[in-house]
Amino acid sequence: MVWLSLPVGTLPNVTVGWVCFGYLAIAGSNHHPKRVIWLAVPTWWAGDPFRVVKPRIVPLSSPRTAGRTDMRSHHPEGDRLAEALASGPFSLALRLALKSSGLSLDRIQVRLRERDAAVSKTALSNWQSGRTQPERADSLRALAVLEDIVGVPDGALSALLGPPRPRGRWLAQAPGDMRADQAWARPDGLARALQRMGASIDSVSKMAKVAIHIVGVVDHDQRLRSLTHHLTLRAECDGVDRHTIAHRSDLPRSVDVTDTVGCRLGRKRTDMETGFTTCELLLDRPLRAGELMSVAYTIRTDAKEPYHSQRVGRATRVLAVQVRFTAGTLPVRVYRTYLPSIGDPNGEQVEVPLGASYTAQVTTADPIPGIYRLCWDWD
Image 1 (cartoon, helix red, strand yellow):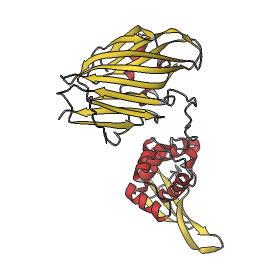
Image 2 (cartoon, one colour):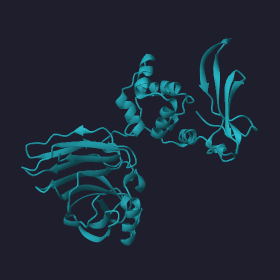
Image 3 (tube, rainbow, N blue to C red):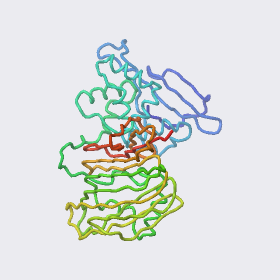
């Protein structure tokens, strides 16, 4: 559904009537001009003008023309859908279209199945969250049916799909997929800490993380004592001689960076208000664009953190996060979640077993960009 902002004079607050074999809805208030808000026009069967096949929502304006009128006065949800259908991303447009339809995922699933375009609820949820997108032929056909079910123009959602995600092991992908405000809570603190270090947000993306292996240790006091990082990095431009890292705790306190391998510690700054610590790892030598290097370092803290989050970009081919607990002080539950960005609600909680060494782990190849979180409960 796309809203039209067209003053039509002084009419009652809402008027519905027949207009050229369609329905016209007009809304307004005593203080604003009345506006046409939607027009539903039946689609007529070719050669039979008396057989109505299905009413369809016809877009009457777009964000390109919206600047000439005021589309924001009365229908913010409709405005958001119109903007999302024009500029994306796909996940947001789909989420708003489903909400606008008033149908639950269960009802959507039933209607898709009735039209031989079955899609699981998990797949629909993943499409909404941005974790995956339809790519296979049957998924794309189901998306076309879904557009019809939720009442958006043909191709409106499929036009927002990006290219199929590369699957090859050695394909280069761009780093830095999430903006700072998508990747971190309180990105203002990250910006301040970097500024105090004489760096900027851009400095974080000069090195791409091709492989990430993290080992955390939780002690008998339920404190996350250390996080040891083993990284394979790729230079994104010539002359890169340092890697900038950021760490944030919900329990603001200073952290130390020790046990560096393949690098040494440079400048370090903290923003205590938001719990951010940023620092430079000075590489053993400058790198050429595309060159790989492995480094390791340990972040030492004593916070009683109930989880560890790891942000992953498109360059990452392997992600492994392990957390080792102490015998006699084991959590009652360990689970993992995934978030496309920090502003999204927590995803499905998947139980993670503890091994014989009291270690929980999440390991995945070709991870989807986003935030991976390993969590534990003590009671």
